[in-house]
Image (tube, rainbow, N blue to C red; front, side):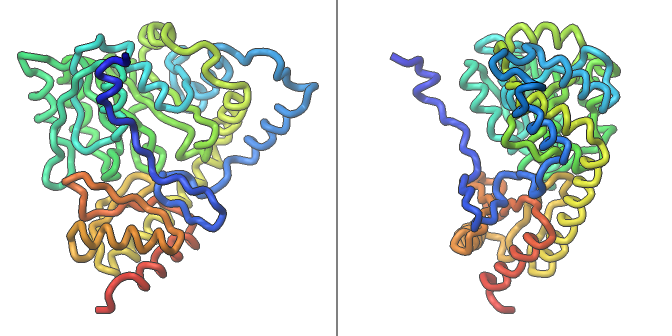
Amino acid sequence: MLPNRVRQMHGYVPGLQKNDSSILKLNSNENPYPPSPAVFQALKDLADPGKTALEKYPSPRSHELRQAIETTLGLDTGTVLVGNGSDEILAMLFRGLMDPGDTFVMPDPTYSLYPVLAEIAGLKYSTVPLKQDFRIDFAGLLKAAQDSNSPARVAIMAMPNAPTGLDESTDDLERFILDFPGWVILDEAYAPFGEKSFMQLAGSRFANLICTSTFSKAWSLAGMRVGWMAAHPALIDEIDKIRDSYNLSRAAQMAARAAILDVSWQKENAEKIKASRARLVSGLQQRGFQCIPSSTNFVLARVPEGNPEQARKIHQELEKRNILIRYFSLPRVQEYLRISIGTEKQMDQVLTALDEILPVP
């Protein structure tokens, strides 16, 4: 008999995965551009028997990749741990920072994987609704964490948040990290598309801060499944104990290392995404949508009529036209649609389709 927590849990539900070449897939926040040419060269080297030995295990600790991340991002030696996507990193943190039955706090809504990881690890959690303007209620999180019945040992949030795309002010974040009585995890999957990152402060200026990130978004490597965390070296050593042995393949290590070292490619890519984001926002606003300011590679937009029925209809009509975007049934965002940022041509394709779908003024 399976444990009740497994039988009763709800698994993570990703965006619809249709990878046919005729599909415009804007529902999973993937990067529309191929990765750096250096990645393809690394994979060519992988296929050369004279340069790699696929019959041998890869580096168990992914030492060269960790070092490349630390060097490129200006992090201290020993402050990085890598995993099979940031999802594995988060799963390790949930197991390593808390015991079954412990509680953590998070804003609501935020990344929907966190409750799933909690159920897997036998953890409890408390959610604090976002403010009316979709900003995080830091005071509310602190209050929830101090619940006398079950004080929280961890606070976690996506930063910028998902699915809103909003970043928070540096002052508010720093004050919260200093005031929180336990670990603070900032999931910075989308930070390269914004204006700030706390990665360099994790474990140094803020001993209780852990930052996670991924190669899936800003480095176009969603298919390779590589993520990392930055924290104090002492914590890295402890969490490393529960890492799966050989958790990253040789291909993943080589591709991610090549990607992180090509700094100019990543910066140019981020600028292209930002330009397309601005193009999409402008077009949506012209058609009556209300867009939440985004610091990510997606936009959350309130439909013109401001009701869930129209949001569902637009979502369905776009799918009929082979355009996949994301509709959430969450109470706070039922009248919103989330659109991943593609190329300028793809954004124009979305706007043209909306002109066919929306009623003529």
